[in-house]
Amino acid sequence: MTTAVVEGWVEVPLRRFIDDARVQLALLLLPSGQVLAQSGFSRALDVMSACALAAAINATSAELGRQLDGRPFGGLHYAGAQRQIYLAPLATPRGALVLLAVFDRESSLGLVQLYVGELEQALAIAAPAPVPEEPVIAGNFEGELNRNLAALFGRV
Amino acid sequence: MSSPFAIGLAALVRQRGVTGAMVVSEGDGIVVDADLAVGVRGPVLAALAASLYRRARLSAGAAGLGSAAFLQLEAERGRVCAVGRGDLVLVVLAEQRANLGLIRVEMLRVLEALP
Image (cartoon, rainbow over all chains, first blue to last red):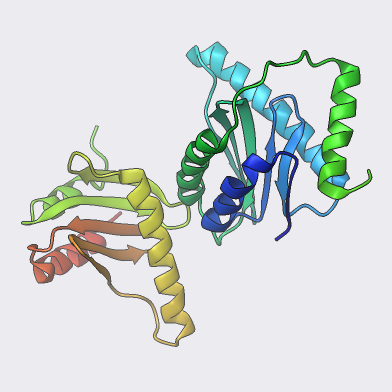
């Protein structure tokens, strides 16, 4: 399965997660929707759509958790007929990330949850020193989005 | 409120050397009910044991041996035993000194009584 990363420090932990958890597709992104790494996708457009949807779902469930429970919900699982998704916020020294994993009957929710925990720990160890956050404005966002997609798929 | 599995799990953990018993969903690898000693990482054990049992069951089928009856994993400091029915897997964690024959009989008895 093809794995491509925008930032090198996520590669080893993500590859290990994919191998251990036996997921079919994996996407690591910033909560804003900018992609950091992908595995299993063949088209930039699919990555862009999946990132936008994952970021929206993450923001919605986090806010729903705040409203209902006083804090953001954790992982979100949806089981389809053949495939399942697990969406999880990950806390790293470089800030919050979001993982989207798609798996079938070759894996299980329990296994994915187990290895998401290990992925979060591995990312915390691998993360370089934090950098000051730049404000996300529309112009920057589109430029960075295209740059990240170009890093994953070549020219977009 | 006790679950329909509580009585069976309690009977298993009463066996000498048993440090935990749980009912796990084979497909999801998630704990349905558990009676575990302090320190046993239930969700981790459930996810891995369910995956192991499922693969053993598939292997037995692929080898033309029929369905898997009883799975026993011997490790350095203990044993993991598993039996399944439908999507449920009964998992027992036992020390080396445990009487495996008694545990096996009790597990099969509890499995029969699962709702």
